[in-house]
Image 1 (spheres, rainbow, N blue to C red):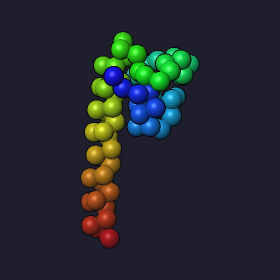
Image 2 (image 1 turned 90 degrees about the vertical axis):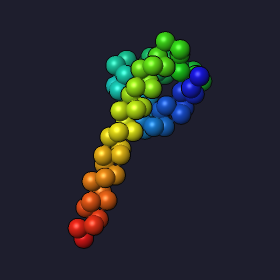
Image 3 (image 1 turned 30 degrees about the vertical axis):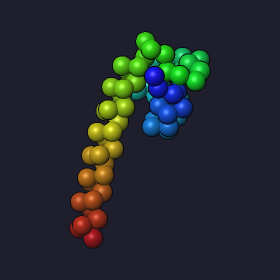
Image 4 (image 1 turned 60 degrees about the vertical axis):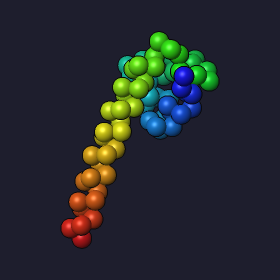
Length: 68
């Protein structure tokens, strides 16, 4: 069980979440309070990918700050 609000917060917007899992913005809007069970795996995979992107960005920023 995952709250839709939590998933959206990670991606910033409903549109970004929708794009990450390959559905329409209106589909995400219709979810209500909880991510539907049929979409949980897709959302979790997209969240994992987003976390990896964020970590890579953090590594680049740390490296850049050491150069200053």
